Picture 1 (cartoon, rainbow, N blue to C red):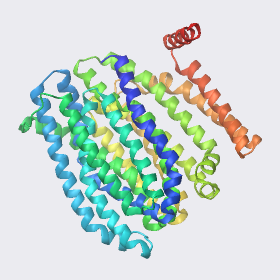
Picture 2 (cartoon, rainbow, N blue to C red):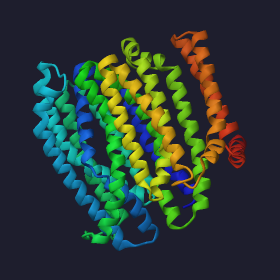
Picture 3 (cartoon, helix red, strand yellow):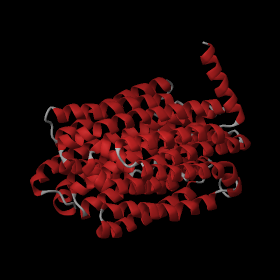
Length: 502
């Protein structure tokens, strides 16, 4: 796999998340205002519950992506058919089981577990039951989305994610403006999921015209399940990390405070997810390169990718931390900023620390060591959820944000120290000197300068705008002088010269 191909897939995957993230950020204030803080909190709760039920997903996606990429590199059509058939059957089963449980448990969850206002119990129960039906579709969609990615066609999955990722929030705004309630909003998501799954399957059949249902043999089943069994630890961790704090806030603090927390969390997760999508292509890429025994190329590609992802994530983090209050004031209003700005800053720092493990995890799994990643990920998730349970009771949503930062600071360094030189063919010293040192030093310097500017210029709109522009300019210079290599600088200069002459 060539570097240019990896870059194209990274860019396509980035766009698949960037456009929906932009639309979500723009439409969120309208949706929150239209539904009301309590109703939106219930909506966030339903999303969290449906998301947490994905814990029964044994992460066949991970094994499927790895071995589809490997069998595709070897042009083994029979094994490709078996892997796709196995994954499809398992995800339909997972979706049915989870959907039935959610539908059955909805009245109990609404009435006895979470702090839902009594006047909204009936609507919340109906919406949660509809969400349970959508669970089946979401699981099938999750698996089908991974098939083009495992074959190196991130452009296909990106088009689907971008299209439906923009369509759903836009249609939600239409529903809310027309007077639709929470039930109508959840129903809309289910209907769009039906359309998404149908179109995805149609595209996959074109991508794999030779595909026929083929019952997986015992060898293929054992191979995929064995890899996925350890990768399932990561699934448990990912679901717990993404949803546990919201469930705890919903149970201990109530729907309104859940809205204040989820709004900050949504901004942080949407923005950081863009850089995660860039690094995600390294999972199938590392599997393909390992299958071809091109470890040296993988090492070079990894160190380049580290510099880019650390730079991008660091830039996002310092902008969110320094401008947290201003961003929330402009986006959601002063009331939201007053209650959520510190939460936003803490979540941005926690997510940045966690992001340092994203790329190493992809390489580690692609080289066939999901057990290591899984064990660290589960430890991170359990620690984060345990701290959140204790701290939310003491300090509300601020405690939830602090718990995530503390857990990240304790677990991420341990994973980096353990994996490099053991399961990843790069030493920790190489990683630090070639990937982290210059980038992190510069990012910290810009962050301190931005913090000083924000205090010197004030937190008003004009002062924040000047601070933000100065930080973005410095980040651009940092990217050119520190992150780009000489050949990349030469390519950029040549492109600018051609544009000027044209």
